[in-house]
Amino acid sequence: MELSDLSEIESKVLNQLQGVVDPELGSDIVDLGMVKGVDHHDDGHVLITVALTTSGCPLRAQIQRDIHSKLSHIQEITKIKINWTELTQDEKSDVIGTNLGARSPGSILNLLYNQATNNSLFRINKFNTNSLLKSIEDICKKNNVEIQTDKKVEKINISNQSVNSVLLNTGEQIETSAIISNLDPKTTYLELVGASNLDTDFIRRTNNYRTRGTVAKVNIEFKNDIQKICALEKCKCQKIQLTYTIDM
Image (cartoon, rainbow, N blue to C red):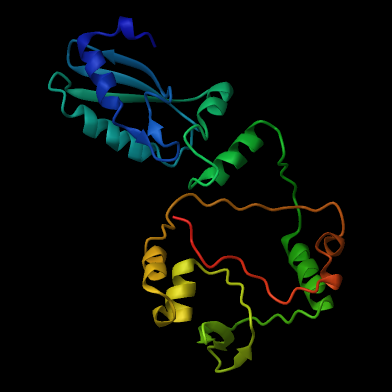
């Protein structure tokens, strides 16, 4: 789209569209090259062509609302029509992840997207989920891992600033010196551990922890025996610590 070919009204439209940000890509749709055309007619109708990263983009409705909101300030426009299209493969590679660093929210989605669309690291293989879970269960049991189902952890007991046990909803108490939780940080720290066992700054940082965003699920297939990779049988670890602090 050549800026020199735009009329005064179309230039106004383009300026307003710079205020429409793609939440996933972190920049406005003009700078990202998603606005492919602006066509204003004498009757006040304007046709805007917008290219999305995918035809089924879940943020399409939000971008559409933002476009209408921004253009409502231009008096010469009486009707807005948006023509949706899709970025080319090269354009997608240029914009996906452009504004994200290694520790930015959503980075994993952009990594997966680039690898999947560029025919690189990831391949989708059909596998039997039940067989996979059974294999994991068998490996765990072989290494003296006890699996309990249909039970819920009610509380993580703390003594002298260290964990000593977990209390289940059945009333059973399991003694332990280390815990790995797959719950979100707020539930783990504020509900199970309890705010009374945490310092004020850590509580603040936990409350500020943002969990809204894109979720990606990665299935990893190992070519070699998982026991050899992890050396489970030779493991002499006494403690596994994931993290105590949370990056904001």
